[in-house]
Image (tube, rainbow, N blue to C red):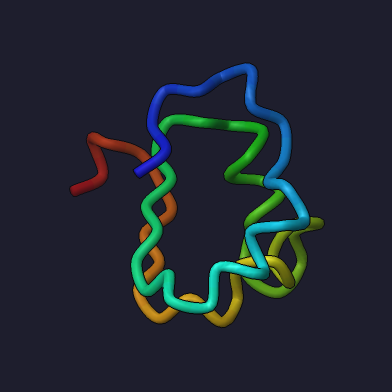
Length: 61
């Protein structure tokens, strides 16, 4: 889980190499959430193959 990391601006390219990563949650990281937006975010291609993605805000649960 990546949460409340407001200074985190993007995901590293190396995240693509984590072939066994099945779950990723990103919450309360505005810039990163925009970059991970489905199909249009700059980082979407890095995470699109992860089976269980949860992108959003803590209070949206």
